[in-house]
Image (cartoon, rainbow, N blue to C red; front, side, top):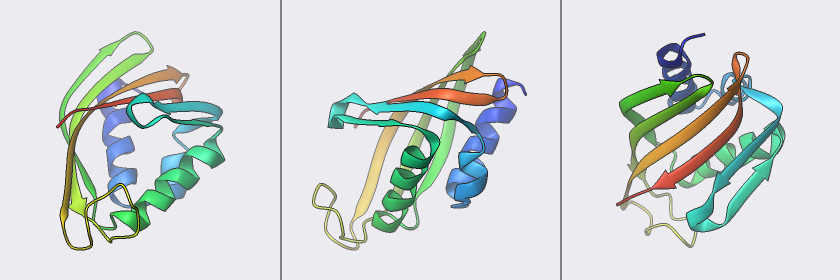
Length: 123
């Protein structure tokens, strides 16, 4: 699978809240990090459960891809995240307020699946 196809499927599964389809894009032993918040997960189930939990916090969230760069088995994705807070997480705005963040994600592939996802966020 080429980088653009992978990223489009990754964003589509996330936006559709299709957690099974999203999880199938990752290896069983995937590692995830978001160092800005001290988040780390190991394993597909832990990572997908976090994504599922976050979907309840921002139920209408959408990723909008801005740029994809690939080099071998590594893909860098720049995108915007936007949605509305459900008010259920203390580190998010109150219910009804917008949640917007720009991200850069580094995906490291093993075959046709991601074995690692590292997220970096901006304003």
